[in-house]
Length: 72
Length: 147
Image (cartoon, rainbow over all chains, first blue to last red; front, side, top):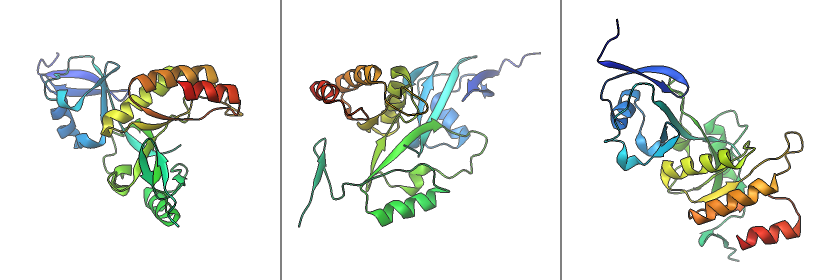
């Protein structure tokens, strides 16, 4: 039986379960990631940091969280 | 003698740009860059490893207030991927000075100049300051300069 309080998203290419109604700030808090060190795409669109609070994730959303690494 | 290196209206004390790939650790990278005196380091954009939260972060080893990050698109073979990478880099922390590489050949790593010029045009319109990896063709260089 499906749990109605849980939604499955794709996070950096892997399935990931979140509570229904989770916004991007809450997702980062759950992952213990500081928002000033990452950028986030949802369904291929870059989300500005000031919109994290209001962007509620939906089932099947594709979320990419990226950071800087050495290279180039 | 004072020797200031100016790029995009920003002054640097060193002309050296530190590459940050291929090192064993961020600590080793940071030590090498510090020893070199470089004011600018290249950076790449990659997925956060969600499963391993204890992995060190590049940004913990290089204070963006004291060293300039130069996001780059090494490994991109088309304009779409290069633009995405640099837009993401800008979103991480507002970096507009970037190094654009759009490769055309996996073995020689020669640039794809058509895609490079297209990408440069878009980036300049979006306010980026673009350092371009290009061929030594003076006509192409002129075209890039005119973008």
